[in-house]
Image 1 (cartoon, rainbow, N blue to C red):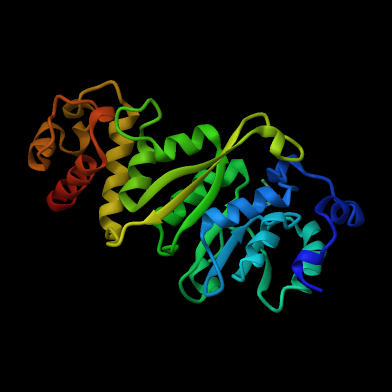
Image 2: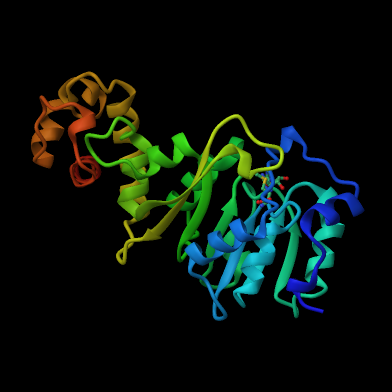
Amino acid sequence: MSVRDLPPLREALVEHDLLARKSFGQHFLLDLNVTRKIARLAAVGEADTVIEVGPGPGGLTRALLETGARVIAVEKDPRFLPLLRDVAAVADGRLEVVEADALKIDAAALAGGPAHVVSNLPYNVGTPMLIGWLTGPFRPVSMTLMFQKEVADRIAAGVGDDAYGRLAVIAQAVCEAKVVMDLPAKAFTPPPKVASAVVRLVPHATAQPAPLIAALERITAAAFGQRRKMLRSSLKVLGGGALCVRAGVDPDARAETIPVDGFLALARALEAGA
Ligand code: SAM
């Protein structure tokens, strides 16, 4: 028996008497055509290790296993473990199920080498998880992540877009970020209140040093905290107009008009002056 021979997901949920829990952000993808499309967009295959956060009933897990990848699935809700063990039993040793809070795991130690992250994230923890992967010590090879549509747009927005802000700057300072798939609420069981989208993030070839990212977090928090003000005023506590001049950025400009490179220049100037 292989992963493809497993019973349909709806049957597996009934068999294990499982209902979605709101407190765990549970909205399931039960259509394997959808999860296979996400696995294709993730572009993973036989040589790859994937960390999947929140496998739930395992629809995306099955699709990832079908690519030949090795999957480490981190699930916080213990009710899903027996069902996931059924999947592991037919996965030729390629599925490891870990019961843990993904916000607290040491992903690098868990993966034991380079790894991709693929996840239909719980909405309530999606953004902190992404920030952790963008700024923390574990550097995924790629990330293919589901967010509510509005958050996906904020990650991939370009300068001048309404959604351009702190999240876009930090994400794009570290990665190439693109919305690769839109999903209506009805694609999920139970349907959430909002539409969703998948974002694919691939880190730039040269990693930004951790202190620079820390400086970038401070700069963007101040600049977008008062986004209608000129930088000379919103960045006052960090050096204001003088910092802008050192960075080669117009002190009279507002945060929303500054491209990612401009923010990186400000972060470098802050670091150099610190
Ligand atoms: N991947 C499944 C799918 O596509 O059908 C389930 C997606 S559901 C939106 C989110 C899943 O993440 C749930 O199974 C939930 O229990 C799990 N989860 C929520 N918070 C978590 C956390 N902090 N760490 C690990 N898993 C978590």
